[in-house]
Image (tube, rainbow, N blue to C red):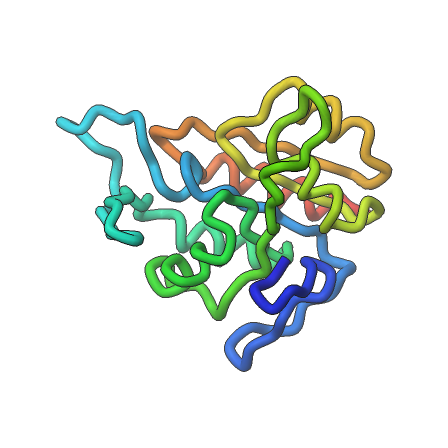
Length: 181
């Protein structure tokens, strides 16, 4: 999943990024609707700022960096976004995160029938026995069924794309991780 071709289980390390244990749960983080907000009333936007990404303006939540740093104490973070490796080109610096994060690589031609477009890639790249939380703004019934069928504990946190990741979401994720065996 990492740009070097390594999976989330074989994360590339940098000097700034602490070594992570596969004993930590994995947190898959979408970007659009979680960190990059949309659908809000532009006359009274949420706290954040615009950032150009490949010439496209994205409205980044002002709290996203703090939230992800807190979550990084309990989880191994990985991008799970259509941005793929592009997330590492912009977001660690913009959000104050250490080093690049591993990312899920999507083959847009392959996915299980009637399934969320990310599920096939997640199944290919994430050990099915590893506890996993996934934050996204577009979970559907198929995601819920997939999570329930996984061998490992799995938590889905669905965000409102106009608000993104909230303090309550972070508290819920940290509480869930603290209760894992």
